[in-house]
Amino acid sequence: MDHIALLESVSLFSRLDGRHLKAILKACTERRFEPGEMLVEQGNPGIGLFIIVDGKVTVTKTLRDGQSVHISDNGVGDVIGEMSVLDGAMRTASVQALEPTNCLVLSAWSFKSLMERHPEVALGILPVVVQRFRETNDSFLDLSTVKAQIG
Image 1 (cartoon, one colour):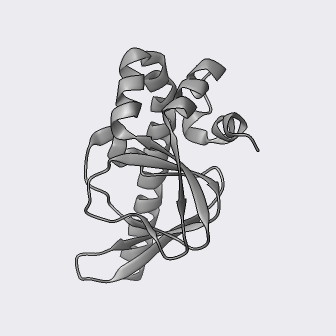
Image 2 (cartoon, helix red, strand yellow):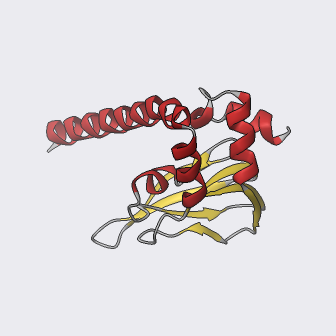
């Protein structure tokens, strides 16, 4: 799959037109991660987002009590780290390559610069980010309800 087709399939960029996808691709660099290598570590600054071109990663979160919780496994077309890039907050989870993994890396600076030059990019990704937030919130509320019923 060529990189433009990959970007078209990425939910975060699904509402953007071809010229904006080309601008995003131009701003990206390619990076390869070997099995066991960390893409991002919880608590570190969010200096870029990662679009998985091929391979597989695992996402884990360390809780306050030190317990590590598996969040998800991600593969081709998934985006890692977009929230930290958008809000400038520290990474909320760690991401590690499970197998040889190639990514397009879009730096926070490049992404913000692109959105400043082309506000329609920000308007295109905003509904996707809000939808993800709603889904996460709904999942959290569902889990809270189950715990309350059990507890």
